[in-house]
Length: 52
Image (cartoon, rainbow, N blue to C red):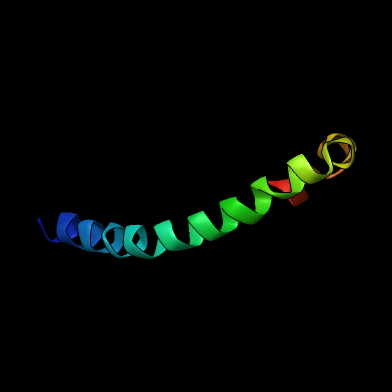
């Protein structure tokens, strides 16, 4: 049970902070693609990690 409690506690904190960061990260990421779709296509093939 000790291990399960530690895992639950570790997983609980992230979700609370993740939503805020995920939303902020997703908003800026989604804005660039529509603004410059042509630049996004070549970048995906060149540096997929940069866009993701």
